[in-house]
Length: 302
Image (cartoon, rainbow, N blue to C red):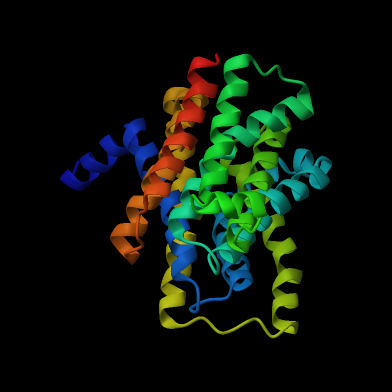
């Protein structure tokens, strides 16, 4: 075995490394959304992303898709809704948000997804929320409010939030809905299911891309825009999914899920390092509140 093969084999067997790489790529998506402004239009980035994924995965997984086709066909409406909410709407709103908010804000607001999942599970399945979990929800939502208001109490009381922050909060609600609903997915390998959802996301994104063109909001990607698209396809769309599924296989979904809380940590670091965004005091307070609320809800609230 060659040294490079040995290194890859060890990396593939290390769940913690895989989850760190996964969350780095997800955090990188927040930075990519900001870099995309002026280089590739939001729906072009969303639609081209899923077109590229669907040009690769269905062919690679054609035999497994054929085996699981009856289950996929029986639940096509459910899978289409997941693709629309979790993939198309989430990414479209994130890329739109980048036009009027920072990558740091986008990353911190992503940290609220586990709390929205907790609320969604209560609404959908009446999953009990204990006292400590309710406290964690409240603390995280205060962190979201601090982020959206830029730490300005007058903005909070006047409800004068930046459109980008509101778009990102709505995006998190959509992804939380996807996470809650995916509990009822048909039994099949995770990558096969992801491929089916991505295909529906691709189809659903095409009319939105057509609307962007009709409204005159589309512009051809710049060379930098094509590089951003390549990163989004290879990193957050493909490699992160493979790494996440492998990590879940190694240590289980519960332990792997804890690492998702690294996204709002990595995103500000990458935003400062790559695009030089300023990290203010309100960012630190909001990040502490969001992560503290998640810790209270997920760990102390068990």
